[in-house]
Length: 147
Image (cartoon, rainbow, N blue to C red; front, side, top):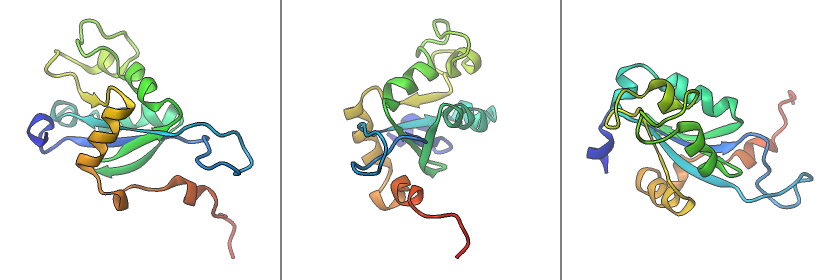
């Protein structure tokens, strides 16, 4: 799989910022998803990594892992990611999507994103150990006030 993405690719895993991850947290609960998004070598070479990350952060997803690799998670993140990224064929990708704005050809379409929850789980396990992924539930429940 590394040959497909290239050594320079940045891998992203996503989750939404405001979504709770545990029952009993005091807020609404819904299933959390994680997805793998990889900025392909053409996106890295064109210095689009920040733009890609910024679009996911603006959408409210949380970056939970990155190795010149990272992952996003959140409610319906797989479907939302696919919509944000746009059609694989750059000539069909809508303006305002990552591929619609940045892709130059179907073989240079800037990013890869998991196509399903199951696919995301497989891809995440290929690229990350569980210890390499941030648990936002732990971070969200810590106070930022000085002790």
